[in-house]
Image 1 (cartoon, each protein chain N blue to C red):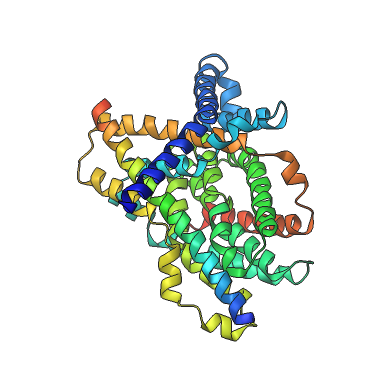
Image 2 (image 1 turned 90 degrees about the vertical axis):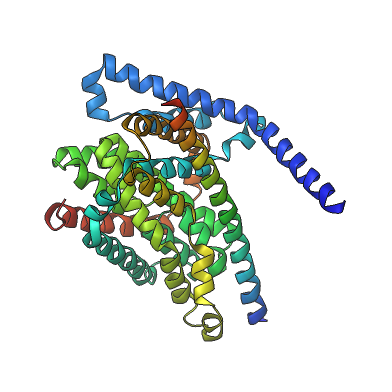
Length: 357
Length: 42
């Protein structure tokens, strides 16, 4: 009886939550439609401009969202519907699995995985080494190291509580990552074009050089479909390593507190932080490899994936406030940008001259 | 006192992980539904 009442209350509250989200979701959907239409319009009527700016539906969705948020603003009634960006972009990643086969994943191969692993741990090392030259707390340094080495926002959220970071330290890190990512998102494709990177090279570069997963995919897809797929694989490679890198960062932050670091159950820690949605991505890859999807079905899945990304990125744009970024202060931004820039330059050299892409 | 702080931090960390895990399950569900939709609509 009591259980029935609890489940009724839960479903009622879920229903109420969904009802509250509807106005915001309508705005998100309108922006996604506008972005899709905008890409089609630019391709059909201003091809040269489209090819120069690479303004596809993803970049347009972010731009439209940011424009609305930072000019006319978003009424509070719409806010609850803007919280689903992560779910939508992660769902897009799961569907993206139908674009790969096991053979294509193996082709990217072990050398790339070694490259990703070395880059991640080296970025953490570099962040902690540079940290001594800046005024900041250990938890903030830990959040910045996590955010700039793995996949930005998710990594910061996974690391923050474990290193006892305050809410504002996590918010600061996220703002720094997003500023870096936004600049990278609109400059990396132009740099890639200027130096003649192939789509595979560009995908691998942004897959390591840009930190926020959503921005990695956005930049890759802006450069071309193959760049988007390569960026997706590299992003997955990073995401798989998230629990291990976070554990390494927590041990670095707690290294002066031996009792705290020895109390951590490392297996449990890694299990708790493992991003399980990757399993669904791999199932989609296996299903495609086994021939469970026809060409038409893969194409349709691609369309749905594009919509998931357009909706997710419209939400991201609508929640990006320039004032939050201004309030982030300078020390963390300087450290983050130095680390991010060094990583991007090293990654570019490796991608251009060492990786067989 | 420090041990208590660490225990509280770990508990908070696990609560955050649980939230992300729940979201991931939602993503898996939504992803499977969308793949079925793709098969039906193709």
